[in-house]
Amino acid sequence: KNCYIIAMKGLTLIETIIYTALVFIIISGFLIAVYQILESNNALYNKIITEQEANFLLRKFSWAVSGVSSINLPAGGAAGSVLLVNKVNFSENPLIFDLNTSDIRLKLGSNEPAILNNQNVKINSLIFQRLAAVGNTPEAIKINFTVDTQLFGATIYLRK
Image 1 (cartoon, rainbow, N blue to C red):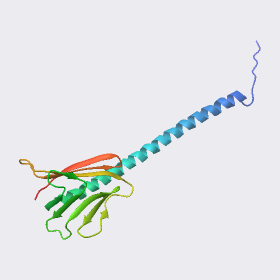
Image 2: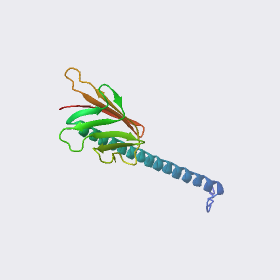
Image 3: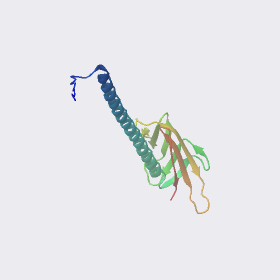
């Protein structure tokens, strides 16, 4: 029995096309995975920035209503887009929070208003609601605002 071994040198055109297609598919899958990782990282970063901004604003509101001597706006039982309070032993009364286009501002006394939020986030809405004292529950200010389409809120009870 004679065995013939035919040695082929190089690749055929069809083999080259198949290997090129396989490499292209592998590289495409890798690039898609990297793109998705980068996009999810960007979305997570934006969510963290939004939550940090909201927490900062909530702390500012909490500071403003701690130790108040009077709440001028909103009126009792009403809601509005402006919070105007006077603090006890504070030389720059009144404190005024409002929404100007997409920025929350704080005005201390006769000073110019200062923008509280970062320029990279947009505040879409701001509502203050004054809640009357009921039974053992003290008077409160309910705050709702939207930062980049995400709703945040808190109820801050007034303790004198």
